[in-house]
Image 1 (cartoon, rainbow, N blue to C red):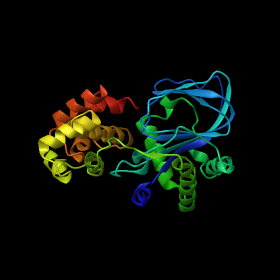
Image 2 (tube, helix red, strand yellow; image 1 turned 90 degrees about the horizontal axis):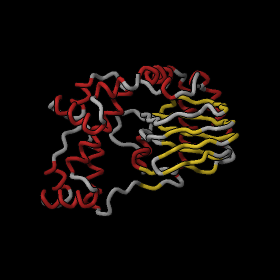
Image 3 (cartoon, rainbow, N blue to C red; image 1 turned 135 degrees about the vertical axis):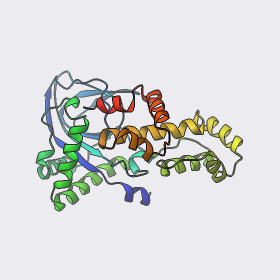
Image 4 (cartoon, rainbow, N blue to C red; image 1 turned 120 degrees about the vertical axis):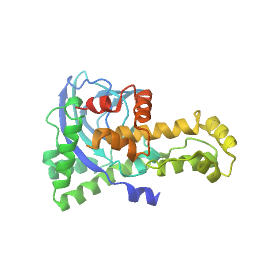
Length: 285
């Protein structure tokens, strides 16, 4: 846990107070950053894969990065929003390793924390609430640049506030468990840690103290997919993050994730996402 906390370096992309009147209705939002909300007045809804989540005053809400969701607002609604982003260079991070609750009661100081975060980051508020106006690569780059140019004292204080808000969710969070078998869990952790490297099935099976064939059968039994498919899925997820938050060329994205065959990377990416890497990047412009 300590090592994961050390690797958690959240950047504040956007923070502000939004007031709506039946005009917060957006479908199939899917962003490379995590959203935190503090509701002050009114109600709205978020459609998630597991169903409808009602947003209520004096509660905090957590929407992980790359979570497809839709907003439904039919009346007056006021909330603070905070968008945070983890740089893709990290091989793993706390936000990936834990399942955070979507909703928790707000603490006595949370309103003051959001207000202070807004006060020291006045330029980080959103001019419009439409996700398409800020969910794109160029806007993300502008916000990342603003983040880097802030005074050191504001960066330190902002990060401290984000840590406090995340701590509330962490109290009720659970470690993600993808398998009940410790040997396969060990392999999954290895894959996450070495996602930028070429991952060999022989190495994975040896680390799990299993023969290669036994390892493949057990991995599929525990996870529902073969080790190779799991590795490719995780590499493509990392590629998605890089494509929308970095100006690295598509070819270099492939090479950075140890795909020696650029054409294969393109085919695999389209198979997983339905888009070519360039089409996926362009969809955020």
